Length: 238
Length: 294
Image (cartoon, rainbow over all chains, first blue to last red):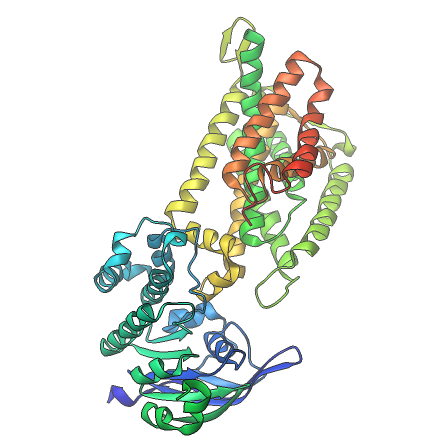
């Protein structure tokens, strides 16, 4: 069944920036239609893992496969075309360009279906349609996060990676964003997200990994992680 | 009054050329992320190519235009890997090194022109190109074919570029890279390949500029590249590096001011304007009159 197909597989991945070892022998799997969350503090290596998977960096060791094909070392634009995308930390929208232009940029590699995708995105995010000619800089933090997610959707991805979606957002807005991610997952999108906010993200995920200074220290179902005393102490404070 | 109008017309045609040069230069700065000091030399080289083609094809203007455009595009595109080889991370260019590299390329081109063509003497374009008789004549005001062409091409080219940037897919990719190269990479825009497209586009502009300069000046020389290069840099700095709209305004304004000085004061002083203004801008508004858009 498609449900169990492995979409992304990270095998023994090591990434270094000069002398700094950002990731050490990381193993991770993401199956179709699940939400997997990567929990870790600042500097744990979450962004490095997502960016290397996308193809921004080449790993020092290890292999990343997407839909069975090796993608480690392949440039990002090829991977985006293959169905992978990243909603970066800090939203990553182009502040000086309009909402519509940002969305069209998301469809850069999928311009054939742009009309269809635009309609769907506007359905999910009516506020973006209202503001479609507005410059992205004038959007609120929550709206910018929505724009970043909507933009990722325009490329018709199969796996959406989201880097710290709750960063800098008010708690109510964070709930909205997580609701959106859950809704997207119900529509069939596979989501890999990284978060410092362990509680809210584990509540909507299926499985999770805990990343600490570049190594995976714990992994399991979301329920297991939520109940793990170490996780509770370090990331939930309960 | 008539001198004034005549000089404004002269100024607009010259200004259009400044605008086109600044636009080509800024495109390379914004999208290819290089400082191409040799861009004007590429243009002058294309003027020479056009001159050669004119000589061997019995003054076929169409062929000369095509040859000029082709030579600019080729020169740009061939130099692209040289510039792109200087990479910081994957897919990013070290902008300071490109400055030095382009200075070198400029010197090489100037040298080739000094030794390879017409024994280094200035070349003259056939008067038919410039237009021997004015299209329009009202007292002291005369409108030459070359001037009209220069203005027309300037307007069309700049509008074309703005249309491209704001209404097309490749234009969006250009703007994305101009604003945030890393963000563009995350959306899957290939930096090097898109950069290459901007080399080609600047090349096309360069070819057009070559023809317009040939029509306006009627001559070319190996040293012309450097003279023009300094002006283009001045226009960019005054407007604000990377500011296309600002380049439009400053280029035209400079052209008109130079023409007015030539008409009312004396020819050689007109060259000083650009640099005096540039000095003032650097002292009092270092980000340029319209702001840096890098």
